[in-house]
Length: 338
Ligand SMILES: NCc1[nH]cc(CCC(=O)O)c1CC(=O)O
Image 1 (cartoon, protein in one colour):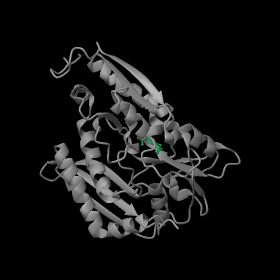
Image 2 (cartoon, rainbow, N blue to C red):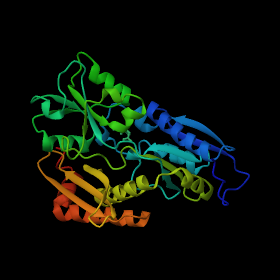
Image 3 (cartoon, rainbow, N blue to C red):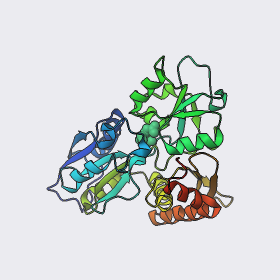
């Protein structure tokens, strides 16, 4: 049954413009958000406006070399702030931890499987990352994945692969292509109906791989003063996902301080011995060459957005105490990438 609109929603405002990127994944995720909003607000009208962003246009430069960090978000945020859009739907992983003051994170849908996965080239016999022989080429452009590969699998080679999911899979499948496998997010493959391409799910216990902050979550950005849309999103958002991603983003925000940190995380809700629900966060910071790493696992009672942000900060402090600070300093000074 549809929920009655909260009192703060003005009866005059019944049409909303929902912006997103043009990729297949972005459009599928936007349909999920619009579907949830239409279900809660059947009398309202939502139109989808899709747009290519800087990140979609520049497919040649390795991601870590592109100077602006807001590749996927900035142009859409300008349209949002100007009122041409009311909502932007993002893969939350691509949303910088600092959002311009005119905009805010309005909510998140239920997280899809957040893990990274290995996709092996068709015809090759490998069933897991540990089956790959020395010298095998793994396609990825993420410094988090590159650094974790260098740490755990120094016998493998890493080569950059850019483009949307279909493009990357086509590069993997090309008969004369350089890659034996690629690493992708499970969420993207599952959401576009390509789950059968997954060879192995990677996590702390399988392959020893942690995922990106926000991975698998759909983030919904709004104008920071738009109480109407915020109230609407409160009806469709998912509380556990929100607490997980606020903790993860708080951790990353503290660590990165203006540079992109090779941080992996894994968030899991557990019951402790007294039956109390806690958020267990595993985290790792790895130097780009994989020679140094710092790992922390903490459990925290996380029942509110403020508690989630405080918990992320606590994990960050512990990571720095375990040595993450010097790894991040080297990355900032560009030593580790030479
Ligand atoms: N940076 C690209 C990107 N942004 C979101 C996803 C997948 C969906 C998600 O992680 O939520 C991907 C592709 C990938 O990393 O495999």
